[in-house]
Image (cartoon, rainbow, N blue to C red):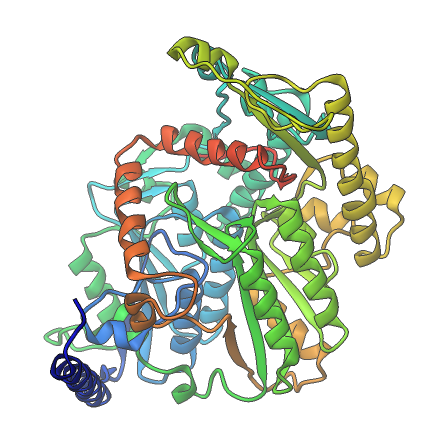
Length: 600
């Protein structure tokens, strides 16, 4: 039924009034927000929570905050709070509340560097843990004092690396993974589906990683707690320890409850006995603008975050956990930053195990074009491997931590064979084809000799014609030299520097420092860090502004994620890799880290 003229008029007027009402609400809220900026008392203690998922970057949306929607703390934000507190005369000290942060060893190293930088101010920084595992204690060991409650425990009892294999489960389901690997010894991501135990290459790489991590752990503890590396190794062999034992071994400074730690800070900061310790939470302190403290101003440097598995299309979140780096999103961000004449340099922050070969190449090309206009520096976080290394290899400089996982220059392709599964559940299927290789992705049969030869050629072209030459050009090496470092071999940051795959050790701040040098910016002046792509606001997400998402899609994503989150972690991990197999059956070649490794 057609709407009457009166009805249309009322609808239009109603829409206008709603829009005006919304603008008024937001305006009033913004006014109250500006009036209600958090105050930072003199000689206060900033209490920072080092816990939870800590994504590499999460935009802070003031509008969402006004509507009471909590803003996640990111790893970059955590480091920013320390930078601010270092120069803020109102902040007398910092207390780190460490509770199982979900970060890797590269970021743990970067956080320790940030703690050491803060300590250069002369201000105290203490850490408090209820339970300290390897990573938690390693972070805490960089602080001036370490405290545990009297009933707390320290579990610095060394490393255990777990690699999971799903071949047995697939066999029971009648599913077979058919794959082609370039670098069969080391490019063993498909081994999870085709084997039931580690191969020699995977074991070699894992042992190298554990040696690096164990060495960094023992050295860090030895330096901070005034011990020899041999003493620390012996302490690790005797762990775990209750709080009283940890104190006797000088692993902690005292076994105290939180209020007693506050008393220690009061004494350290010269409070009177009857005074209450003035504290500021990290969530409140995030609202203090960096530029109000003389930071994050001056010439602009773009920081582009490529966090998660690499995929075609737009960046998104995976319902199976983690983020997806979309080629469309990163290419646009790089192009925009390159075209903006006010941007003097670009820092690409990579935290990715790799993914689609095609998506990686598209991002590489955008970086190559940008590099002709201004310096491009890569900062590697926990991992920048395979496709993650591909998009980094042509930067002017590459910065990584000694514990960053990188390299993995190799490729694999494949498809799932479901014939046994179909037979098991009683499914029959038929294909009607035209063309000799038209059934190359059919799921009920393995490749014929001709089809396999074609796929082998495809994989070799990606590896020998694309990946190797581009790494060779970016790192000023011959293709033969890169091939000896490739074959899917994973390297630690330390090994990567020795082999010329990276240039410097350090984190994001080191990369920005190098970018300033390459752009001929004054070393003694800060720069304004501009995040690309421009973060989508809460209202954009809610009302579906733009092409990337709608409110309906967001709700669908939440429902799917809620169902997946109810599954055990090991099952969620297997589903993430099942997602990879599903993408490969569409013909995507994968440049991915050879294994998903959990080190405890």
